[in-house]
Image (cartoon, rainbow, N blue to C red; front, top):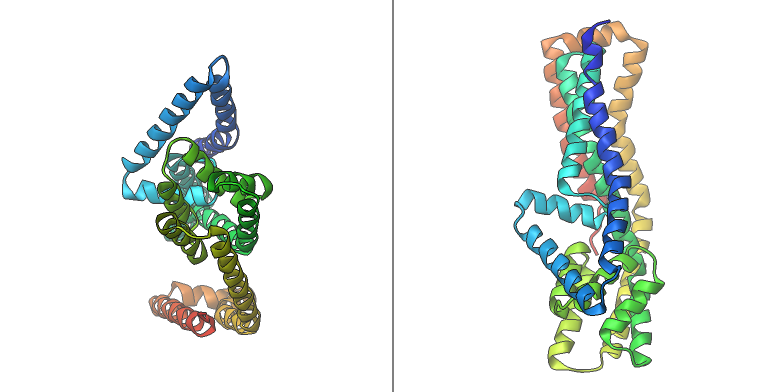
Length: 313
């Protein structure tokens, strides 16, 4: 048997090892860390250790390169228990496996490179999809979160306790993100730093408005419950308006997607019905130039259609 068939085994093994380490071994290590942290240690020592761990984690992030910081933030927004170097390892391993498999299948090397490039960005697309889902869910629940905090304030709770109540009674993402805010404030971080970190994890205009309102009220005083009630009503009305606009523009978006996909669909049909003619066209230099020109025009057309069907409110 040709030894080249064994080449994909190494990167495939690395991918499975990385997936096991990220999704299984890391969770076991986290449990062991927590158990070791709280076993046979008094409350004062627990607090000191948690403070040290939080400080080291924050300092480590500040010392990272901008690219690693960006990947780390995207993983945190997606709520994935993964380090940036593990994400990079999985992406490169997937790209390497795809490239070697396509070479083994005797695919043209340029297509193998294109396939490897696509595989390289698949984990990125997955993270972006998870971030999109969490951000949309956070936006939809935010008015209810503010209403719950208002109820806590009227019951006599302070801001930290209100954040903890919301974290205990809501699902992800607010249970996770507000749990982090409460933990940071309990570890000695200022309210301002904890809320600013929240706006980085959830880059939403409504969240930024909430944080600004809380910080201004903290400096100037006033009725925070009444302020958040008005803010909740504004956010709820704005969300209803955005939902209505999205429903009205859904037909235009679908039409734009169909128009964008028609050339690719026709190319696929011609390739199935007339493979010899399509093969001669693709292998000809003029055909390659025309395909490149068509892809550029498709890209421009897609951008134009997106701008047409996107309505800003």
